[in-house]
Image (cartoon, rainbow, N blue to C red):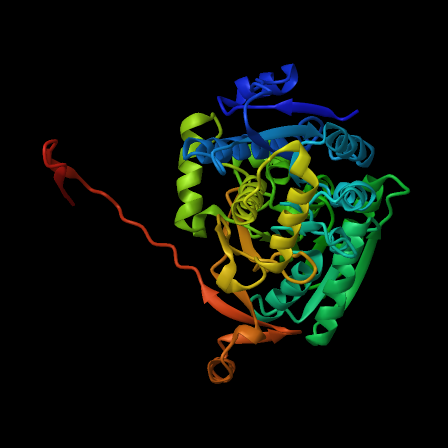
Length: 466
């Protein structure tokens, strides 16, 4: 069966040991409410999965320190799916067999979420919230699955609008894989670009049936001869992205590059660390690359910065990946649902408790007025179980992803006052896309240079600053 763990937040090294050894157990007699997390605790994406698990444990520790839910502690049961569909099914089945988790946070990989969601969680009536899975099928035809991140349909449309209205691109070319993630993003990006009167110059498909590296080399060779290629949109996962970006930059191709959220990851940015040019000049390969992402700490709210500071105090990591913040958002909305439903956490009420949580997520947290505040802003769900989230645009600088100067924030038209909407349209402050209005906002970076600090008084905690 899937491997199960319980963890507590200590240092990264200690937590990893606990994950391997099975963690610390609470007394079975103690009144608790169980929530399961399923993610990649081993394998190529282990760093992300472990960070998510540690962040969740820190959050639940805080909840328990404040008295828990109805005087019951919240226990995190952690399962490893290795981002593998077969392991995801095994982990989901083990959650069913244990018969104690009121809800599930996970999975990371969309394919895992889709498979486990429809074959296990939906059939067994277990509410699940994915912090990471963006493929549209995750929540389609499954009213037991939710997500705290945008979906790929919104992401691709956003990227095309950004290329047109902020990057002023009239021509684009596409490089994409035949896997569901890349193929779907490329398809929606292309359709949206055409509707925006952007000229699609060239398209290159990377076939997963063959060795990708020769295909990439051939694409880059052809790209060198295409002076009119325009912006290059790369719809691939992070490992392919590292290879592709390196080939493009080593070939001296200067075209503007754009990519989806898979490039907003440690797996992508750290993929260049061993290359000589990157060591000599951090950001050699990634500088200027535009990437969509659900979360960037530099423009996040106070809640996110407070949580990040707390995490840094108790772990060796400098900064959490965005997936960890999204995981805590999933936990936050579940905790609020537990409170609303007055969950008892008893085995005999488990079926009813799960149904209550699912109903509250769908029928209560479904408007801005009843939204839950999370690290990434307000969390509420539409009729499909998708969180209504803006897509953020990041740009790489020195191999670090920072917020781009221009952003597009979304809000459904039904929440707009018509006179305000009309005025904003006339002034060019918003764009319209399907049933949504996209607000143009600007990011301004400011700072203070400290020349000297003097006359420090420890009693009054005052000082003079130049």
